[in-house]
Length: 341
Image 1: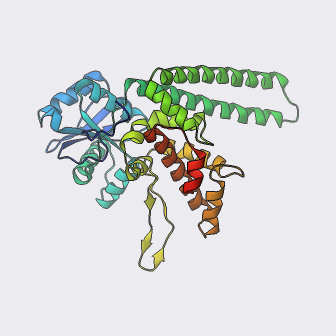
Image 2 (image 1 turned 60 degrees about the horizontal axis):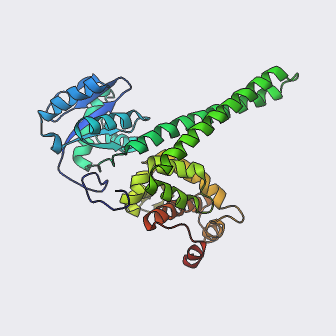
Image 3 (image 1 turned 180 degrees about the vertical axis):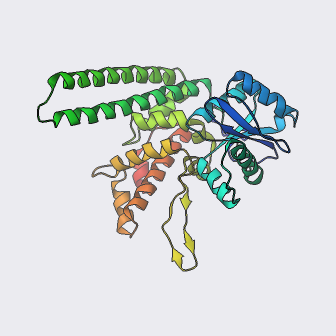
């Protein structure tokens, strides 16, 4: 059950001796690299994945295999879901930034699917990436709903840009403006229906519904942040330590120093950008006058920190507050927050 820190094989921090299979994921195909074998390609469908499992099991037992792939716009999640459903296989999804850095370090100039699969496998052999925390069926449903809502919000932004262009014309075409308004209205209605389905799915899971309510009790945390955290970070909030959680989100500090050179400390960004994006928006709201992090942010700036560094610290603090209310199973207490500073 969620709510207990499980030290099982799917914990992101566990290091084990697996036989790694590198997979370069494409929309319709999977290029796979097994140890001491030439890379081969199978279809990115159930039949192709079953073929991959048969060939991989000949190399080692499925319980000793770990299928590693680069994060590729959702396709890697679907492939990992299929591998876990068909054979309870262990999977790992690695941020592209880590693979790019490894490729440069290895001075590999060839860039094609077989080369990418082999690079991913060699990266896994050397760095032992943590295993993926398998999402539940409810979380997969939330993920699909969230992706569609995100796409519809982008369509609304596009239509608003179109409307602005038409309103700046010398002669305003009212018929076109009415059409744009109808499109925006219909998209907003669809988003509302998707959000209702999202809320219904959350409410059917008592633990998840309680955690969502506790997240929303934090001043400045709204539905958008709650949706993203439940979709892309829920098990991680429960099962990862703070450093592991920062790494999952790509928010751990990245120093830049050599000899007398002291560069800026930045976020690594080698993690889920969707979480960073929504926390950035939440941080911008929370540092306004009267916001939860207003005093903390301006205190950081007053000590000499650059504004962006102070804002990143606010993002991290909001993330830890969200994890805190989830793990403590209690709503946000402003009095406790102010005492701790």
